[in-house]
Length: 355
Ligand code: SF4
Image 1: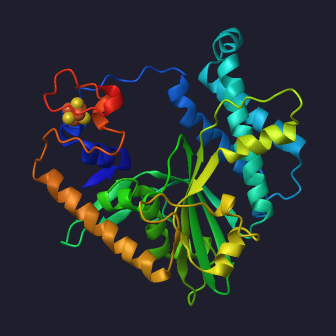
Image 2: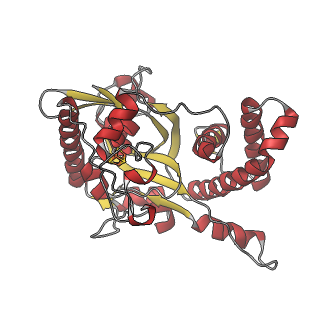
């Protein structure tokens, strides 16, 4: 069985909505255009190209000046805009305001990542890594479900960072998000937000010799998980008085960037991520019990096995034909809030603010 994370999550959120969207295909097709919903695509494009072009001798270029970073970002943004709307006039009329706002978001991310890599021994090594098995060096993201079956999860890892310690390689996967995405162990237990961790485990557990050679892991070395990190940009409108300096504006904007996700509880590896152990760069977790996001190696192993069991259980439910309207609600959120089938669905349970 092959699935994307969005299909998997759609099913978990409401089997009936999944059935309407993906089996009956009742969804309206998206109009080709550039709107605020395309912000994520834009950010991914800019970040991928910026990181690729900023690499020098296998690592993020520490000599990159602010002026060079801005010039490079502007070149990439212009390329993207031209590809989307080739006509100069039309592009200027329709996109100037939106692009300027997106540019500011991209620059805040870029400045922040430059600062991150000034204090890190991790090296960004793969960008937009396709996990579908089409690259012989990268194993497909296929998982046993504990009952002799397997499930293949299609998708892309935004960035993979590597750190070498002795003969061993430590892997951190990074996902750029626009919005408030945070890592939540409770969500993981329910099957939500599995993708990034699953890809981390695939990369670490692979026996693919080409991949091991590519990442520089010798035969007697191991590949270990160092972390799975969401980098979320949800920039608020910052109200400032005229005396605030550009540096202060940037500092406040950077505060709205959030990192979250589980990291290996190993001080040397954490210091390789950030030599000051700065929590802004080492992230957090959102849980009813704790915000601590550090996991011992055995806890990572346990997480991997728990996720496989969860996947197996969701797979079996899907194959059983279960398609009832059972929205998975959380405090202040219901999938019914924005569901296109709400008018015809007798089981809609919107959250309070959408009633
Ligand atoms: S309105 Fe709610 S219960 Fe009905 S299909 Fe949509 S998400 Fe499911």
